[in-house]
Image 1: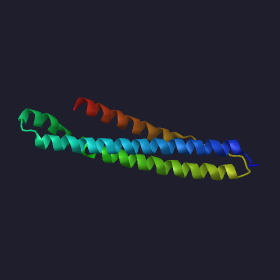
Image 2: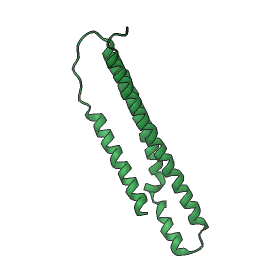
Image 3: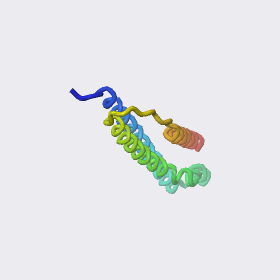
Image 4: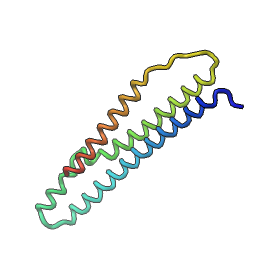
Length: 127
């Protein structure tokens, strides 16, 4: 029987949930990047200047580098979750008691990530 199996399994489930979230953020970054490339290709093929100017707004740096930023944020999310998983696994392997640290860094990172996704969603809805 594995000692303290419920805590070990909870640590693994939490880690896998963060990895899934990171993969979803990376996928969203790819979608934004490819969608922007598609719209810029369409804008180059459009002959009417009014429509070209409307689609041309997506060449803004937020549209150009937004997908790459989300891909980087997803990778960082996976790296941070891996570090936290290893740290928690080491703490669970010890026999001595320990006090839990505040997870403020993770919460701040997640809040920034959510605000970034909301900003890109609003940007795509407006553009």
